[in-house]
Image 1 (spheres, rainbow, N blue to C red):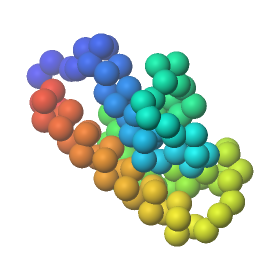
Image 2: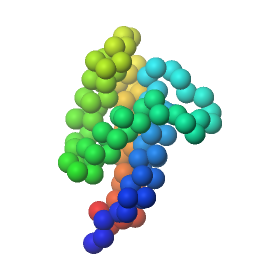
Image 3: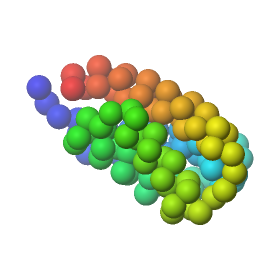
Length: 107
């Protein structure tokens, strides 16, 4: 089966970035519409795509990655349950999009 093209992967990467912007947004910069030059979460989107596509990572490991990013990289504090819920909602959307992408591209 053919692999997704570079353009298709770039489009899906943009979708992950949009999901992170709209639903995860731990630093609270969301506004609609997403600015075309927005790249605040693009490095996280790239890691998530790589982990999904190359390693088929389990959901619990992505939950850990998001929480580690919030606590470690961003040094944010706040109630864990708030971030756990945002992470769960975000990953629900990412995995739904990923399942659709895999089905569309026969992965």
